[in-house]
Amino acid sequence: MPDEGRLRQSSALGFLGDLIHDSRLWQFNRRSVANAFALGMFSMWIPIPMQMLVVALFAIPCRANLPIAIALVWITNPITLPPMFLGAYLFGAWVLGHEMQAVEFDISLEWLTGTLLQIWEPFLLGCALLGTLSAAAGYLTIQIAWRFYIQNAIQRRRDRKAQRAN
Image (tube, rainbow, N blue to C red; front, side):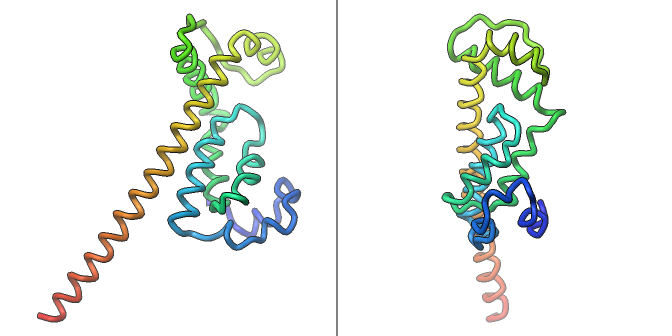
């Protein structure tokens, strides 16, 4: 997880000013972590550079844990980006019923002006749908896992209390 001190001093997040010092962005509770997972998992599918700025902007009103949200955005990195975005294009083309073209993803101006202009509709739709599905899955997984953990902790406490009583 990114270091709180380094994030607060980050020049990339400097535009947030005093908002970066809001304690709600650094809390570790079910709501803030679930919100962070939803934001991070959605933002990793946004096909723009500097996704962490987008997630930071949305973390503030959503009261999401900023370090977790930013860390999740880095799932999209130079190694994972091509297969993820190819998958997004294929999924979007399938949803739209478009004939799928052979596409190689490349991070270059030539690719942006040539290939992206031909496939932008299914690509962006795929990114939006996969982002929404990922966000929902991340949010629900954290909510369920947290609830399960708390129920188990309560049960363990009851068991220990019952053992002491015997």
